[in-house]
Structures are given as structure tokens and as C-alpha cells.
Amino acid sequence: MKIFESRILRNRLKHIFALLAAFMAAVAMWYMVSVRDQLEAQLEVNIDYHGIPPGLVVTDGLVSKLTVRLRGPETLVRSIPQQRLNEAIDLSSITKGETVVPITGERLGPALRAFEVVDIQPPRLVIKADALVERSTPLQVKVKSPLRGGALTVENIRLTPSTVILRGPEAVLASISSLPVEVLLDPRATGSLVRGMVSLDTPSLVTATPASVRVEYSITSGRTVVSRRCRLLWAGRGQDGLRMEPAEVRVLVEVPEALADNADYLGKLEARVVPPVLQAEQSSEAVIDYRLPEGMILLKPAPQKVKVSRKAE
Image 1 (cartoon, rainbow, N blue to C red):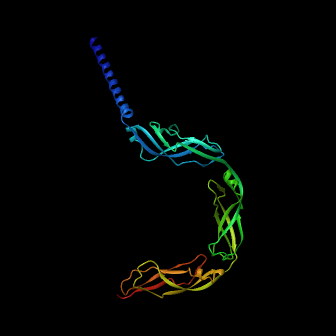
Image 2 (cartoon, helix red, strand yellow):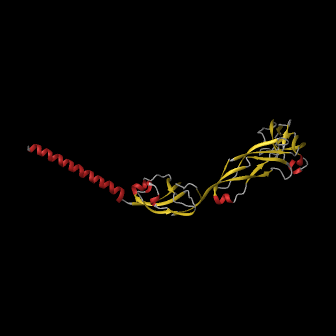
């Protein structure tokens, strides 16, 4: 009987010692986490937003990140990831007009709740919101030519569709009576009907449905063929001691009729040659690179290569 009681006593003592050891380990861990040296850290937190009430659109006041200064145990502070943190802010309480949204530690997510938040910049957001509305808006054609005024004559411009649905802040849409559509003319087209798609350029926070429209137009001004003598130019460096044969070429180009006698326009035609690497008394052929102004077409056959030779040293 005494032996049995002695075993029970030893087992109880073992349990007591085990509990004491666990308690001391827990106290040590608590000390390491909560009592040991406190550190401060400053970090950037990326901000996402959610909960914007339906029928509203935020027009101003959102920031992409916050600067947060916090204090906590050294062990936890050093365990914060080096990359930026991401937190979400609920905007379900905003209304039309201005709403002040204070930024406090409670608004931040669970990743920072183990720390004492010392400072947040900015400490508040002033959110501006407006009603989100839709409105049918006519399109207004703005013709843009890459050539000087009067060089191209355009007729029968048509947009399909001619009206679009704009969606955005009520105040912005109220100032839009029509949406301009810039149509850039093709200076090489003539006679036939030109078709294409144009993307709509809308103000900030405004979207258009559809986002692009079909454009059709006809350029009724004519084109003519002009013969040009073009001096060959070197492109880049390394031409010392090199000679081109011939030094100039004659080409036929097609241009808008209104520019057939315009010296400034025709003078923009250039022919350049990249200097080849040659030894003394060597020669080879080099490709001619033609550079044409807008609306000019180089007609074939046109010289494509020129002989280049290096003089004897």
C-alpha cells in the first residue's frame, strides 16, 4: 500500500514540475514578446478602397498609400515584412459632396493590430463624391490634317454611331453638350471612301459606350506626280574618305496637288546612306534610305542602292 501511495506522489510531483516548467516558458515568451525593448518603425501601407455606395463616384481625395509610424516589441517589429503592406478602407459612409474619413489604427487591418500606432499620415481623408449618371451625348467631328491648311479637301464625313452614352460624375457631364471626335486625315488617300475606327477621348472619370466609333470620309482633292532630284546624304559618322557614285538620284513622287509647287514641302524629301566599313581602295553597295514627308509616295522604280568606295591612302 505504501509503495502504491509513493508512486502516486511521485507522479503528482512530475505533473507539478511539468506545469511549473510550462508556466516559466510561457512567462519567458511573454517577456520576449511584450516586455523586452520596445522599438519604433515607419512603413508605407498601400491602400485599397471598398464599399463605395452605388450611384456615387469618388472625384477627389483618394490616396494610394499611408505612412504609418508604430511602436511594439522588438521581436514583432523586426518580423514585419520588408515589402509594403496592403490595407483596405471602407467608404460605405460617404455621401455626395465632401466627407471626412478619419484614419485611425482601428481602421487598419489585423496585420498592424499587435502594435501601438504612434502616427498616421495623412490622419484623415477628405473624400469628394458626386452622383454617377448616364447621358446620351452627340458627337462633334474635329478634322485634323497632317499637312498645311487647304492642302486636303475632305467631304462626306460621317460617324457611326453619331451619339454615345457617357457615364460619369453629374457635374462633369452637365458641362458636356457634345463630345469632340478628332479625325486625322490620311494624306495619301484620294478619290475613294476612307473608313476607319476612332477611339473616343473622354474627360477623367467619364466613360463612353461604345468606346470607339466608325468614321468615313472622302478626300476630293487630287494628287499629281513630281520628278525630284535628290542629293544623297550620309547617315551617321564614319564617312571620312568615302565617296558615293552617283552623288544624287532622280525619283518620281506622288504628292497632293496643292503642294506640287511647294518648295518647303518637297525639300523635306531626303535620301540617306549609312557609311559601310571599307578598307583602302575597297568598294561596296549601300542601301538608300528614303525619308518622305506626310502625304508623299515614292513611285517605283526608284534607285535602291549606291556604290560607295574608299580612296587609296
